[in-house]
Image (cartoon, rainbow over all chains, first blue to last red; front, side, top):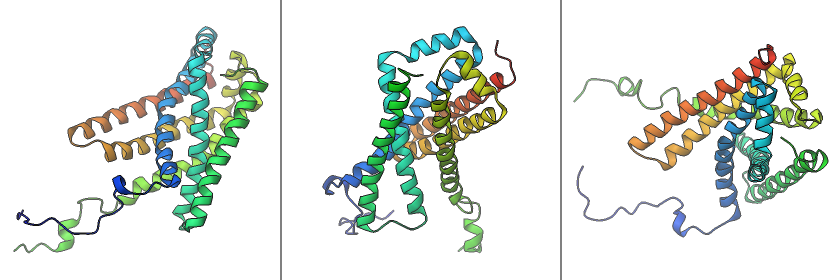
Length: 136
Length: 127
């Protein structure tokens, strides 16, 4: 390749270091983060299924392990991750049809995704933890 | 100067013909998971109790066993597709290849293990 004596002066796409923060950036990376969190949580779901397939004793052991305080907090985080990834995923699917790209609409749908995700998390928390008195 | 046509040069290279496959699979599995996820959470909620007998009896029903198997399998596939993109964005060189291979192993294991567990309950192998 030929050596350049002066730097390229092409326009550069959003340079993250100097790009003004907007909450939609955070929503975008949160989609990825919750996706990775969900991936990290799948072994837990599979562990629960394997325990149920292994017998009553193993299942009781798994239930006890899962009722551990730290894991319960992780489980609530996992529920939120699911709800957010679900809501924001629908937002992405709508975008894939070419709709919803207007600045106003995209920002409003971002608020909606977070709001509905929090609401769904609260509902799931109420149904599984408050009403049933501690779940899975 | 080569006498090969430009078309001849690019055929079989790069993302030709298959570039949209990953993208499309991710969307399709996303739609399936949205439906299955709602079904799964609603089912667990209506189960009421997480007793061993209640849970295994619920899983053992044919429809539940089928949908739960599909749920676990599609979940691990969708997860595989997503994690692959994340790795490709942040990891480079040999580490990228190794990470993707490990991710593939992980996801196949998780998917197969989940399906085997569900089928074992469904076919009464669990004692």
